[in-house]
Image 1: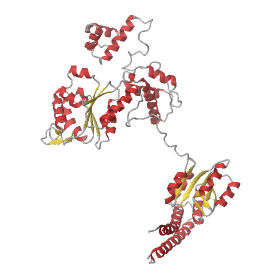
Image 2 (image 1 turned 135 degrees about the horizontal axis):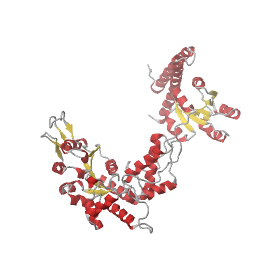
Image 3 (image 1 turned 90 degrees about the horizontal axis):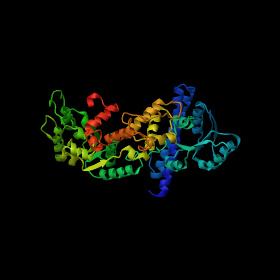
Image 4 (image 1 turned 45 degrees about the vertical axis):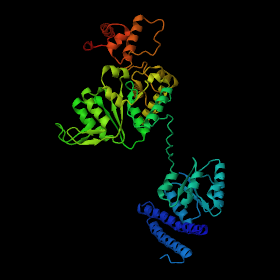
Length: 74
Length: 444
């Protein structure tokens, strides 16, 4: 793997990390809601955002696979 | 409550982080780039800045200088989503700057914003423990360290000679530590077992070897496999058990009591006695052949009065230990350390340690001042004088008394030897001691 390819992968990894970090934070929101520390509706909202972020992450990984191998990430 | 500035370009992260920070009872303002952050800094005063390392208009680190120039410098926590730059960020950290790596949990935010002062890192102990055990920077201790270092590189058996309380067991542990052997350090006291039990203690026994031997037992030689066996008070070992010990030392195998199988053993034997070498030879408490097996490398541990420069160091160490155990904050005054240094400590380091603990218990725990008793007295020390022995104004009787006690101490209390050294009969010596009230009738 050459340096350019490595740089590309680093970028994809960065893009995939972003939704993962969001998922982690939203999971904290769910925990807080379940503990009664914030309104329970916030948990629903957070879970929606988690689902959204997993799709983002999956999409990023698919793009990465397409970019580096031309194959599907499925 | 803190006022926090959160600088991050991910609005979703910022939103959740704000919820958490507000829930923790703090006030939070947000910025999504350096420019916005700079603007906030001109308008508000912050206690803490949570700063993303990579922002659209530059690195969070670019804000350091401006933050440092503020009249009230906030604490800074750098945030990164790139574990790969962790080491760079670590390098930027200081007493006022720390970092978090995404994904972040609520507890992480809670920890960095905690108003409780982080426990200051335990200060490096000022007092160095050589080989992890020994304290002292005097020339005689430096010599001891040299010997320990040399012998630790070999497998030689060591005999430690030194007065009671001088630290023989600590030196044995230091030798073990310096040897970096794989096996354990096992210590036993040869004077603590009856003639019947010492064989079992040293060599182990098989089930049913004697009445009460309900199971088999490994002896200390087996337990110390690959390590160090410390035999304290070796000269108190019954003489008729010594041939068995010799056999183990020579053949490097043990046979458990009641057993027939030979078990190979491999450990360094460090033995100790408070008798002097000449006394060991004269009194025949140790067989000569055993002596030469055990004392391949004899080490004499200096008494505390021969390394007075270490007394202050040891006293400080003991008071620090006392403070740690009891939540006190006692400190020595220079004059107190001078008093301790002037004293002879016939009970050596052990006596000093007990003295410091006793003084600690007697002192007001709310104060930092240690109350020293007017005179330093202990069962070992009551006849000791810290003043020069031959000053005009003292009576002959007084000086004679001091000479008698000094001689007795020199010969470890052996009255026959002391009388001989003093040039008086044993009877006269006993009479004098009676007169001083130092002998019970049974002793005479």
